[in-house]
Image 1 (cartoon, rainbow, N blue to C red):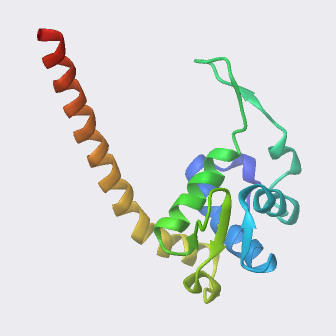
Image 2: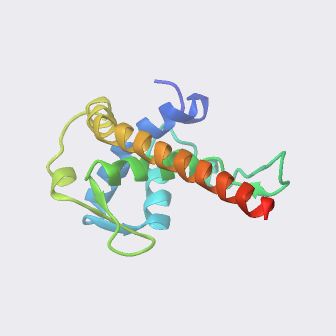
Length: 145
């Protein structure tokens, strides 16, 4: 298996799902996002610890960002959409019964999750397109007056 940094973003996201579930099981089923992220990185052999300190600078805005946050946050969102995780309050993640009962491979988990989350992403995308079109129409209407 290749190391985490050599994977493309979608492979990183899919890969992170199982370590997230396993780490939450180790932490008693609930954790803050920050603690979970640190523990996933510390306990996984394929992820180098410097991913939590390796900032990059955005070419468009000039702001610094942490590339690891993107696949981590998308993995979390997909797991929430698939009913594997809940967010009882901001910054807190909790395993659902469905996740506690899961005992398969990373591939089996990501397949299960994407079967539910990909249609949800599509629905969100369509809603956003409609919202953008409505915004453009309203803006044109306002500018005409």
